[in-house]
Length: 205
Image (cartoon, rainbow, N blue to C red; front, side, top):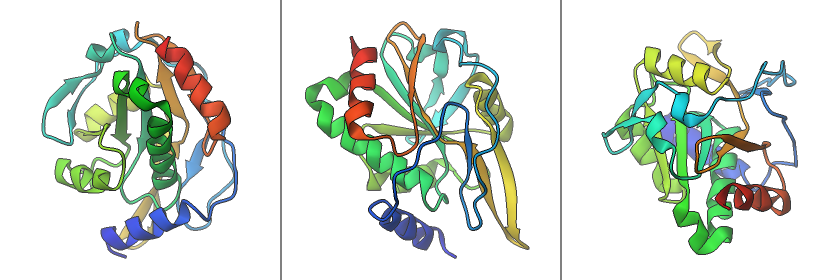
C-alpha cells in the first residue's frame, strides 16, 4: 500500500475511532491485528534540559532537545505510515491548539518519528501539511532516534507485517513539559478534549 494511501486511510479513521485510553508508557501496535496494550515504562521522563539528543526537523534544521527548555513543550512519538493512532493524535493536537487560541503560540509542539528508515525530512514535511502548521516533525539516524526514545522513556519496536512491510509498536501518549523543562503530565491516546486542554493550560502557567 502506498504512503499516501495509508495516510488517507489513517486520516479517515480520525472520525471513525471509538474512545480509547492508554496510560503513561502504554505502547500501541499500530497496524492490522493490533494487540492489547503491553507494559508500563519504569519511570517518568527527565527534564528536557538533561536530554543529550540532537535531531533534524522537517525543515532540515538540526535541533537539540535540551534547547526546548525555556518554552512549554508538547511532544508526541509516531510515524508517517501509522494508520490510526498517529493521524488521530495529530488531528487531536491540531484541535487542541485551535482551542487554546493565542496561548498555543507559546508551545513548542514536536512529533518525533519512531521510524527513521522511512521518515525522511521530506516525508515528514509532506505528512505534516495535513495538520496544524505549528507541529514540527523530527527525524534522525537510527542511533539518534534510539537516544530520543531512551531519553523520553518511550518504547518503540518494529513488527513485520509481511515479506516487504512492517509497522511500529510505540508509546502513544502525548508528553507535556513545563517551561523550565520539567515533566508536567501526559495526555492519553484519544483523551477527551475537556481533560486535555486543562492539562496543557497547566503547563502554560
